[in-house]
Image 1 (cartoon, rainbow, N blue to C red):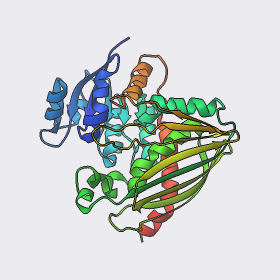
Image 2 (image 1 turned 30 degrees about the vertical axis):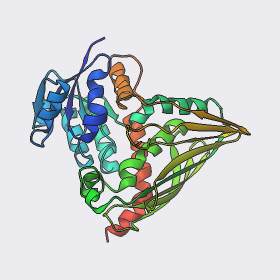
Image 3 (image 1 turned 90 degrees about the horizontal axis):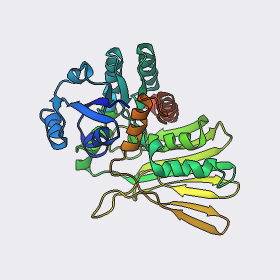
Image 4 (image 1 turned 30 degrees about the horizontal axis):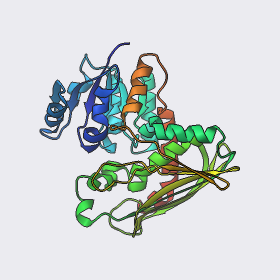
Length: 340
C-alpha cells in the first residue's frame, strides 16, 4: 500500500490534542506539512510533533506537489473556502465538523469536489470509534428489538463571562465564526451518530431560542423527529441550566440502551467514555468501551484505507449534509426571528 501524504491547515486545540497526531500515527499515513495563520503556531506544532515543514500561508500546503490529502482543521467560517481551494488544486479533503456555515455551502463543497473528481470526508470521527461501532452492532443486530423511540437530552451551565471570550468558548459561541451556538457547533455529533445507527431523519418540528442572553447564538432547542425507519425521537437541549447532563436512550420493542455522546472530563485525568447500559426486562448489562488516545485516528485510518482501495470511510459528505440539514431546520425559526 502507498503512504498517504497529508497536509494540515489549522494547528489549534482540536488539531493539537485530538486529530493532528492521528495523521502520522495511522498506518500508511504521513503528515508532511502544517499551516496556521497565527504567528508561530504552525512552527510550534511542527516542532513538537517532528513535522518537516510549517507555514503561515495555507496555500503552501494546498499547492504542494508532495501532498495527497488536506485536513482542514480551521474555524467553521473558513471550511467552505478551503475545501473549494483544495478541490481546485486536486487534493482530497478531510474537513472538520460542522461541515460548513450553511446547507448551501455544504452542497457547494460537495459539488466542487465531485467536479474536480477528488474525495471529500467530514470529521464526524465518532462513526469510526469502537464504542459507537458496538452501539450500532447492538441496535442493528436486534439486541433491543425494533426501535420505537429515541430520547436525547443535553443540559449545560452557561460558561463564565471570562470563558465566553476565552480560547475554548470564544469562537464556538460567536456565530460569525462557528455558525451558531453550542447546538450548532456540538450537538451535530449526537445527531450524526443517530443517523449512523438508525438511518436518516425524514421529518422534524423544532423550536429554538436564546434565553440567557449571554451570547448571540441559540442556547435552547427542543424538537420532535421521525426517522425514515419509522422510529420517533424527542430532543431537549438547554445550555442555560444549573447543571451539566448529557444522555441518549434508544428504546426498542424488547429493551433499551442508554449512552452518552460526550465523555465527561475526570478530575486528575483525561476524558473517559461513560459506559453504555443495555436493559432487557430485569437484566441490566453495562458495556464499557474505551476511546483510543487520539480519537480521530480510527476515522483517519478508514480514509487512508479507502484511498488505498480497501474499505470505505463511514463519514461521507452526504451523511454530513443530512446532519447539517437537520440542524438548519431545527434553527430555522430562531434564525428568522433573529434576522428582524
